[in-house]
Length: 251
Image (cartoon, rainbow, N blue to C red; front, side, top):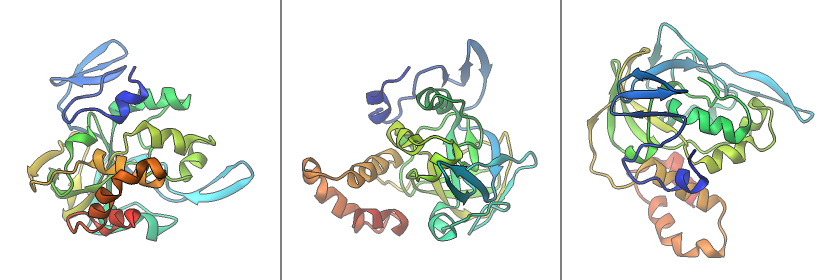
């Protein structure tokens, strides 16, 4: 199983190892071998707000999503069928489509002490194998008939504690360092199970989704030891190639 250090500093292009992983188009799951294509959509998912009660508090969130067999329609401002309890925080154009890697579910489940499955992290697209270190901010991808642009990572919020019914779920997921990828929609379209997420245009950028996420975590946990990173954070805060939705975290 990967260690904490493995999850925090995987080299660019290196695939995670573990109970569930893919190598050269072969998926290994609990000793079984199944041929798959990298970056294949395993499930398309949408969600609507529902109440969750935990530790004497009740909130409304659409954190968990449900698989949609017929696929999803991706629009410029939303995924058709998605609704948010707090649209200002989640329903923004830089974060319309959220994709995560199913290859991370077994290890994340081990850390949480419970099963993690499709839709549990709140993703619209469950991808067979997706490595955040391989996604550069600004790069464009095609999936189904839609065209998307990489905008950044998702930073976990405390609604995960309610959806997982666990007081430390947000912290565990944050430190797991597999945040998934948010996309902006450049061309509307339909995405179905079995479609492939593929790079269509590289912007020539240098910052990966994982790098930006790690900076977000360090900025949130700022202390005097992190002071040498301040120039990098100032650069991120003023970089027009990074969406305002993410830059504001560094101000």
